[in-house]
Amino acid sequence: MAAVALAGVAVFSVHQAGCDAPGRYVEHDDGQLELVGSCVDPAQLPPVQQQRKHQPAQTEPALNELTRGDEIAP
Image 1 (cartoon, rainbow, N blue to C red):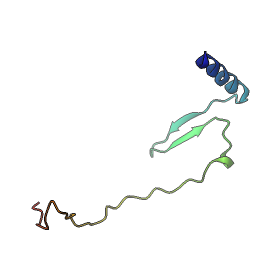
Image 2: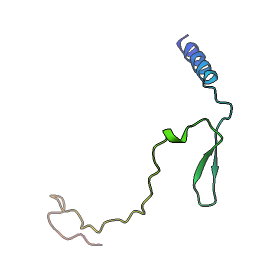
Image 3: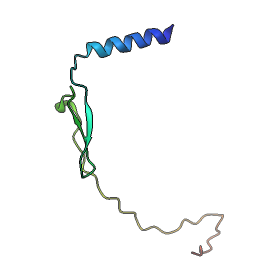
Image 4: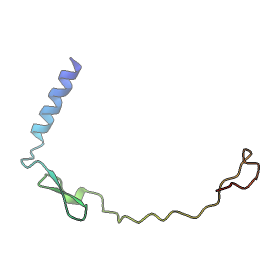
């Protein structure tokens, strides 16, 4: 009974949203995804963060009581 009530509330909420153009995602040649044709207000979205290429840090192997300070052979 609870599931039916929740489903009814969900359907009612979607119909009351007032969005006539459902959004769709379009993938561009450079791999970027763009949301096209929705009721989303761009002013309410968070700013886009530039992606950085991850550079792994040069680290030394960890030594603990199991390695007893012995060098680890490659």
